[in-house]
Structures are given as structure tokens and as C-alpha cells.
Amino acid sequence: AEANRCLSCSLICNKCIDVCPNRANVMVATEGSGQLFKDAYQVVHIDDLCNECGNCETFCPYNGKPYKDKLTVFTSKDAMNHSTNNGFFINKEKHAVVMRVGDYHAELSLEEVNKKTFSVMVPNQDAVDKAFAVMDTIVKRYDHLI
Image 1 (tube, rainbow, N blue to C red):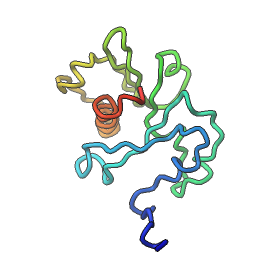
Image 2 (image 1 turned 120 degrees about the horizontal axis):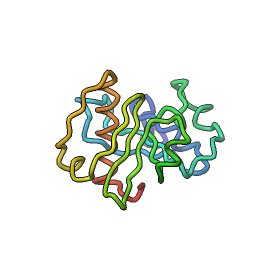
Image 3 (image 1 turned 30 degrees about the vertical axis):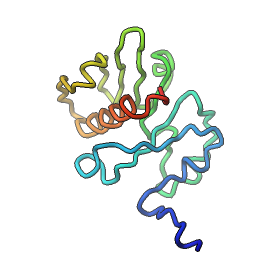
Image 4 (image 1 turned 90 degrees about the vertical axis):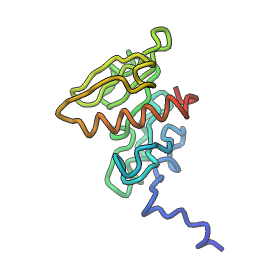
């Protein structure tokens, strides 16, 4: 019976979600599976819930730091500016998304994001494309996170 309840951690790792006492890491099902991601389920970090306890880093089987490495959802531009994490926040007053991925910084209208009417060509194109795919998923299907 226990074997049938196996989460297949080798296929879908969610240790950082399980060990976070504040639920600052969540898993979202993206539409980028196969094209952008080998796994449709991606971990997203919620900045305001994290106290940087380090549990996710300690238990990560891939020597990662999910609280630093995963795309982060911020609640304000100020919070994003005081962090080194890649991530985004939704400026609800301006109906816009402000995003940072490495050296790439952008402010796009939610309409541009929803209609995908923007064009991005940057050196870290793959990372930016992945960030946009996760952000788009959160805006459309996980808006309770923003």
C-alpha cells in the first residue's frame, strides 16, 4: 500500500515544498512542458512568506537553493529591488507586470502578457522564456498567489 502512494520524487521533486514551514514554495503546472521544461510542474517561491530558514536548501537533493534559485513572486517593486532573486510582481494599479531575470528587466502591460504581443531577444533567452511561461501560468491560473 505504501509503494502505491509513492510520489516518484525522481520525476517530480517537491521536497522544498514539503519542508517549508511557511509554505513559501509552491508548485504550479505550466504549459511549457516538453518545449521549455522537462517537467510541466515548476516550483515558484513566494517572497513574502519566506523567512530564509534554509530548510529548502538543506533538503534539496539537487544542491539547490529554492528560496534563491526559483522564480520569485513579489508583492511590490520595492521588495523585488531589495532581492537578488529573479522574479516578478504585478502592479495592479498600472495593470502591468514588472519582471527581472538576470540582466533582463521589463515592465509589460497585462494585456501584452495575456496576448503574448511582446518580443524579447536577450542573451539569457531560455531563462527569460521560462520565466515568462511560469509567470503567464500564475497570472492565468494561480492568481491567488499574486
